Image 1 (spheres, rainbow, N blue to C red):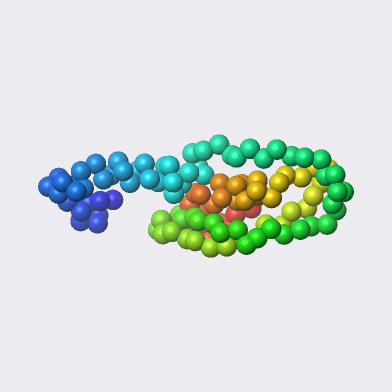
Image 2 (cartoon, rainbow, N blue to C red):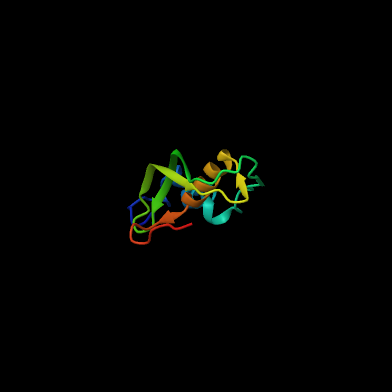
Length: 112
């Protein structure tokens, strides 16, 4: 990738080990959702007997275009239909961020 961008990694001391740093950034930050386990989301009894769908948002999320690796930052809303148990609101946000922390394609909508 660096060669394609005409970045001289052999003679410029500033770019020594840049490829390794870039790879670590993608694994640990940009695409963390592909390499980390799903966040814990302990469910609790639906003590309030909620039966109607409710929405959470806006949740600010960051993702990446799977075609060009261009960053995408946006807001999303999540609809929740409670059952016999529910998870906390903060857990919904963690799961949303975990799912979005991977490359996505506009052509293949994310269903979860």
